[in-house]
Length: 380
Image (cartoon, rainbow, N blue to C red):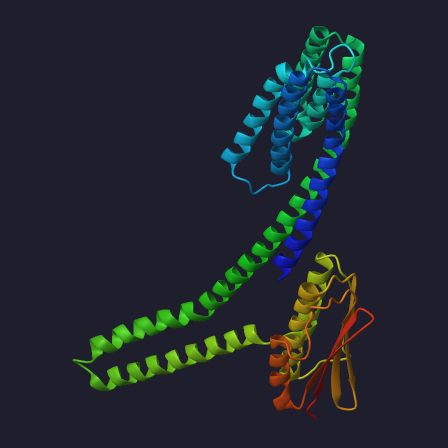
């Protein structure tokens, strides 16, 4: 659930970055439209519109690829190639539009310069910008537009757009790297736990199994010559096997024992990682193992509901113990209309789990705040 929630937030950030990039780059594409409006020749208007639309489509593909890190490399290269082709075609198609009255292609060149942070590293982007300026000067001379105007638009405006684009992409890259770091940290924690469990099992069983194998081999050799001793060795093998089995069961039970404080801390960290301010009030003193296990199940379901059924900014987890009862209260804002109710599968399962111990689960939504209250008696 943690990964799904984090990815959901990352998708929202991606959509925002995509919209911001499109707005930033698209603004420079409105001004070539001014050239189309000033062009008296309908043929040039039609050709210019075709060239501009092709460039916009290719640019949209590149912008989308820039914020889609999971896009396959060959598809990304095809989009870059399409932009290169659209740029080359724009010179003869868009360049002559409004010749002598408006720097039509220079504005398109500014948009292209603004995209360079999406395409190249700084050194290569500098070379590409110089090439764009040369093309802008050539097109301006061909179309009868003052060269200084073309340089100002393509270079000056293009650099401003490129700076904004670079900041937007930089923030997006930071978000992606942070998400990848979270996933890597989770995988590392799981791997370390598996290694620790494997090491503990090896330490528990390694010696016992070695002795069992040796004694079983000895019993097999003694069976034809000394049946009594062979039987004693076989009984010892049986005793050692039973002892090893008991130790393994004890170890596994230790892994399955619930530490409620650790569970509360883990759920709180998951919520904070997902952008929810989480306040935790732990219980005073230790709780019986059975009560802790039941409350841990409630806590996991409550944390899942916060992430799945709300747009919470804050959450409060409080566990109190009074008059032989322990109460867990989980409250969060941002409750949505499709949130869980007492008939939901997860909450119904919790109620069934707590019922044999005399526990109850109640929920309430008021003014956008969802509350889940679980109560359990504490055995004396």
